Length: 87
Image (tube, rainbow, N blue to C red; front, top):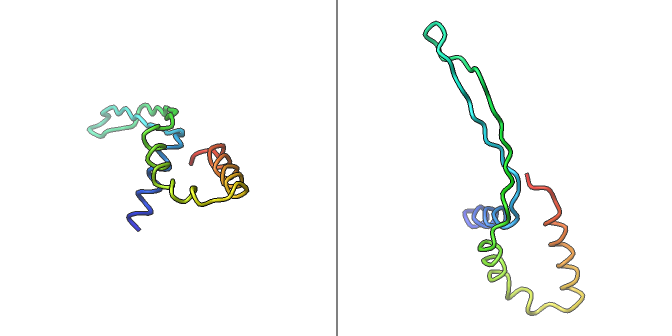
């Protein structure tokens, strides 16, 4: 299970994506903290080349034994993953 989580984290890092940062500002009213402003910033995270390299090294052996047709189908699958929006 830990290996699955690690692999998922590496894939996320390799594919990049968009993250939201929430910044809250509070004022003190009647001795209580009251939310006065909330900013939501969206940031694009670029794909990480080190994570991509790690994935390629990890799965290198799988692809060495594949036929040309299998490689083409795997390429199409991976391109589909890259074009899929990050969650």
